[in-house]
Amino acid sequence: MREARTGNRFPLELPIRIHQKKNSLMNDGTTADVSDAGVYIQANTDLAVGSAIEFDITLPAKVLGTPTDVEVHCIGRVVRKEGDPKNGKGKKRKKNGVACVIDQYKFIRKNKGSK
Image 1 (cartoon, rainbow, N blue to C red):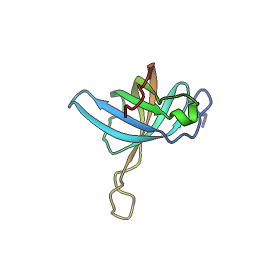
Image 2: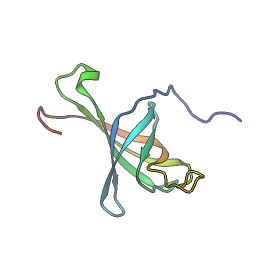
Image 3: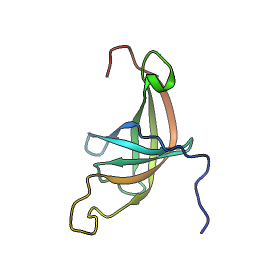
Image 4: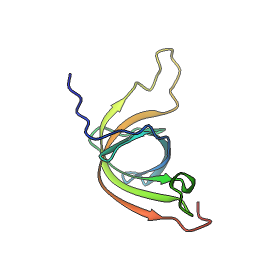
């Protein structure tokens, strides 16, 4: 089976905030890997394949060598959902995994002292 992914993937665990327009909720999660075309997100949310998604990834200042964190605001869509909410032993998983394509992004420099 041929891999459909394009570009290099980087195993980065970065904080992410997901905006769900349908119910105005925001969920926090973590990236598992990031590429120039998409991101794999682990979050406590139930996003359907094909749904539109907006999210903010925080790039830490200490990693970038900048005086402040940089936030990347992304607009995309869910292309794959992984895992059953149960782990096979009857226990609920804490987080779901979703692969998302990034259609648009914008860098936002955070002000000093903002979180």
